[in-house]
Length: 315
Image (tube, rainbow, N blue to C red; front, top):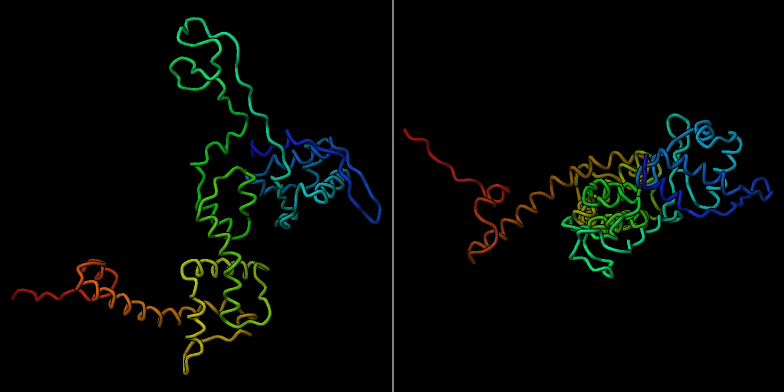
């Protein structure tokens, strides 16, 4: 349950929601719309996601009929208050709340009036005076945005992963009050650019079915991660694939039909690419050794650029 999302639903000003069904324009009252949205928010996380409840459960929470809940859900979807991410294994809808459509609780008013007795240092007209030795300002009373006031406790790696997988966007993060980091922006940009880079480098004439199934979603995330590590990695793979007598290659038609086989081909490519990288690093090390700069000898040994010295055992 997310107190933050539920609070924002409370402070959302609804109008009667209109939607079209079987060619007829129907209307849902704003009290019913708010009740059902509150029932959905009751099981959602702080990003308005992962709320999967049956129509029967929503009907009990909102105290209305099941058929009425179905109409309200259609109205909420038509007016972009919620969307459906898919069907769960239990056969229920996986709801996602559009945080950008929700309201915000008003900020608390500043305290005014006479200072407390004994607070000799406080002036009656100083509304921003600090009360006692607590260091808290009298007007610093936050409304119920409690979970997002602890932004530092949010696992940024998890949020970045959500953006890579597409279960969260930068817009949703901003609407939810999350501090957007540089890594999150790079992940969002890479998620858009990596599939295009893959198709362009390997010469696909038609788009691949990115994010269309569980297998392709896993592959899509992997492609984005490889692209973040090296933006030209798929150009290098294509150059290796076109090398005469290369072993372990894979055709575009095979990739489209059996995408899991691409991992094996990429492993073969990586085995040939690693010696090239080590040779380049060794060249850099030898050049820096003369200039007394660059990586140390111990670091070069650890990376496998140069071999460690051999010691003879005493007789």
